[in-house]
Image (tube, rainbow, N blue to C red; front, side, top):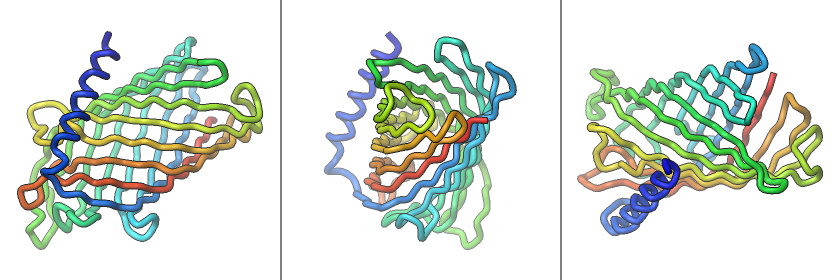
Length: 251
């Protein structure tokens, strides 16, 4: 029931997003994202998650975002896991309509539920994440960058990711695979202004699992982002396309 309600809300938000197409500024960018995702097992059921994502504008030449995240994860026997953690994010101005010249810090607390399922040989991963975000308030018109307060926001995210092993029936050592994902992010709470629809990400990847410890993948993605702040009184929608490279280490 909860999943059905979430899908209904998502469809309504996407429809509202399409209706407002004529009332916004469009910003197109080409990005490059490099990510390292590390799972360090403390026991059979408990692990530590360490993640860093190096995100660049114009593929590699300029900063878009720096994202570091850590969490503690508990694994159940039926493919379900829960995680709680913290992230530190720095967002840099980029594109044709930046809010200002200064980069913005963010402290982020998150809670996450993941579960897996199979349709034939296709492994489907679902991820629901709830975030409490503390975003630095900076006077973008000032010469010196200074955080004078913090803005609190809530966001919920849902991602679905199917993965298909190509040269084996299941994911095992020396397996080539194809994967795709879609993730919708919705803001909520009293401090959310015009960007209830926060962003959507869609990607297609090819990967190789060397063994149970290491796998790597690369692909392309599309990202639609609604900026939280208006520029010249207008909403800004970013239409980003980019290259994606991920490394996964399971120790």
